[in-house]
Length: 223
Image (tube, rainbow, N blue to C red; front, side):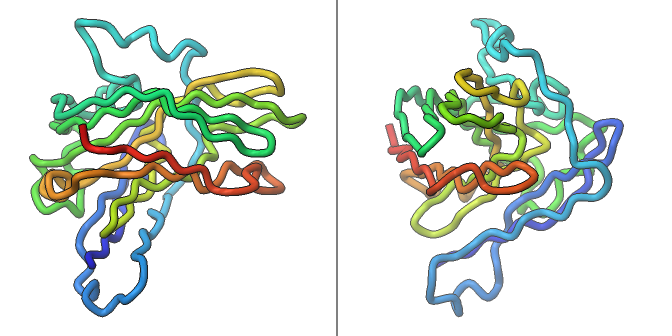
């Protein structure tokens, strides 16, 4: 069983944000249970401004990539490795989350951000997995999409999502539906070794509590 950790690395979007990568744990062979991923340490202000309400405007034939912040802020160029479309829905007490698709892309960091991508075996072989979610708020309280915690999991490791590279339209008021782009980073070699992934949403927190009663899990089978 392999275990992957997420070391911290700084990334600047006019404020100091965090970008992290997963790398092999030398003690993996000693771990008898399901491996876990460590959260990256954030330096400075964690807040990011939400993007426009319609996040699909930039997905065109000329630019087919989901508009996460890797794309919107020109952090890295993308090369499509695989793309899957879904219409899977999971329901919580107050939320309905629908997985619409996922894109696996090879990244070429922009020169100004190249030194921020640390912890990878080969900085020229980094893969981003960006999942598109539609979230419907059936509850009575607003849902802060930026406070979503998620994992991309395989039978051998799990990767924590990278909030500062994600995109959403902010807070969802009761009765409304909005879009969230969730981002995960991994080494290309590790991506190629896996036949299937699952996406697990583990939390959506406001200042007082976790708004999810239970984890929501989506299977991402190999095409």
